[in-house]
Amino acid sequence: MKKLFYSCLVLLTLGCKQRFDPPVTAPPNGYLVVDGIINSGGGPTNIRLSRAISLSDTSRIKYERNAVVRVEGDNNSFYVLPESSQGLYSAAGLPLANNVKYRLYVRTTEGKEYTSDYTTAIKTPAIDDIRWEQPEDLQLYINTHDPQNKTRYYRWEWEETWEFHSAYTTTLKYLRNSFGEITGIDYLYPNMMYDTMNYICWKTEYSTNLLIGSSAKLSKDSIDLPIHFIPHASEKVSQLYSILVRQYALSKAGYEFLQKMKKNTEQTGTLFDAQPSELKGNIHANSNPNEIVIGYVEVCDMQEKRIFIKPSDLLAWGYRTGCMELKVPNNVDSIRAYSYLHPTNVAELTPRGDIASFYAADVSCVLCTQRGVHIKPPFWPR
Image 1: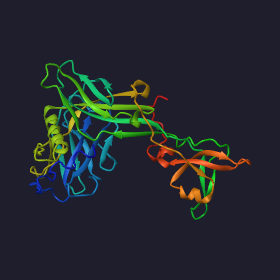
Image 2: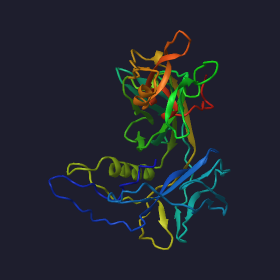
Image 3: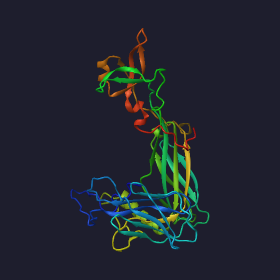
Image 4: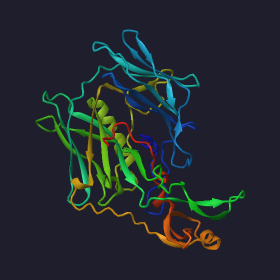
């Protein structure tokens, strides 16, 4: 969700050899952006506060730090959301009542106060299935429905995790002097075992685009939409792949807001694209009703579902590491010449049993921790 609001109030530079200067100018500190839902189902509530910046600003995302954030009920109850990381305000679970309307309250370090409209909680139906098709690439779909035909508007987020292995194991290491210069090669462990800490890794990535859908124009409240795409032969399904999808029910107004947001952040850029429309959500500055605040806070529960995919589940997935080993003589000049590679295993021994030559490969082909972590996720099946 970090990239959703970067360009929400400004236009991209247009073509036709002339620069288009957007008529909307953001204040120096940017407009406040509020992203998240109030979870009424006992699960975590996560609210991200940041600032919308212009395209000319080359800095990273600007988080709103050290704010006071709480969920307030119209029965005078409230629950504080502490800042758990930069700009992220979270609570593990809120004991919200079914007969109470709730809103979000924010007070920034400047002393400015913002509140969303009081909202009744919406019930989110369960996810029916996460299915996939593989003509060649892997296309994932979300399937859900509401038998009472009441939901109609949906939002999804996903997080994907995959296990991957280094192309090569390693039993060797470079020897270095006190100046850090390579002086030779030796076994990593006395018993010549290979390095397991850098062979098996996991990596997790999160959805960054707005994923929304509606069945409002259908006779039945049923959704079957593409949600993620994995190109053929991707490393993601080289060992074991998992995706967790979270589903939220939306109000019609909330869906329409996100629909405008999606157009403004993902579909602008040329004269022929839809131009940014006014983004008016349900969050307001208490002292200045004309101040622009970007965001729409819903109150709903969350439904989630996880699936796993093995390469054996797919047809000719065709993953290749693209890695190659090079044979290096065991002398200082050769080792230093190829020091940009990482040693893997012994190629040849001398009659005395010393290392005469060894194999080496690109570091990323040997140390999986260059691209992931050697920490097995708690939900991993093996």
